[in-house]
Image (cartoon, rainbow, N blue to C red; front, side, top):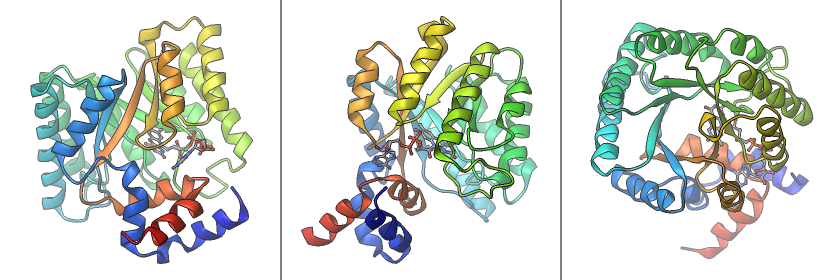
Length: 299
Ligand SMILES: Cc1cc2nc3c(=O)[nH]c(=O)nc-3n(C[C@H](O)[C@H](O)[C@H](O)COP(=O)(O)OP(=O)(O)OC[C@H]3O[C@@H](n4cnc5c(N)ncnc54)[C@H](O)[C@@H]3O)c2cc1C
């Protein structure tokens, strides 16, 4: 990323909210479920699967966590009714993890049970390091009971290879990503190439253990090396998928689909778009150009 872009990233918190909203709208499907379902339908039409995410995190009130739980149950019903090819990704801090782990597990269980009735699947996103142990515990407990859920591991975490070694022996389904939260050096690898190397080591270990691999990246180098690993280990097409975020590198998405890989797009929606959008903007190598354009456009 250029120095100018880095500078702008540092000042993003003081950029007016409406400018952030304008630039970040490409990453978010809209404020309501109808808009999100329309985006999923369009993606399905392009040969991509989807995973729907309701934006929001770190809730401190039980009511809000219960509302989000109800909404996820409604999302599964809508996917089924409209015959869309989509599952759902959930964040445990939206479902009350920071209030009480047992309360959160009950909420997740309600969502997983609703999905199971409809033959669908729930992915638990991974948040910052303060949530990793509890996330893996809840995943493990509900996996043993229901089976139709997967989790996420982050290549920047030192612990990831060990966590892969402790996954369920049959039926594990794991999204591997680089990791988005700012973690300290004692727990997370910091170098760009170091994280890439650990990503590929993690992916290879997952493949060797028979884990269904959800390969989440927009890094062309990683996509290319992942294809080589899948080929080396003769992984069948239905034992892995690529995953990308809405609004990021649609060209790479089309290339992977055209090459015959299954690919799923992460489709977030909801009123609480700000923290998610800020994380996406910080990763955008051309953030300065987009922000300046939005400021000058005067819309
Ligand atoms: C489907 C999916 C689910 C995810 N779930 C989680 C999760 O549960 N927990 C978690 O910690 N992280 C999650 N992430 C985020 C992930 O950890 C990385 O932060 C993110 O994917 C960037 O890493 P990268 O592999 O794409 O490589 P990068 O090196 O960051 O990006 C590679 C290239 O992609 C392009 N690019 C990347 N981001 C943008 C952007 N915002 N705008 C425009 N271009 C961009 C650029 O050209 C860049 O050079 C998820 C990512 C994906 C794709």
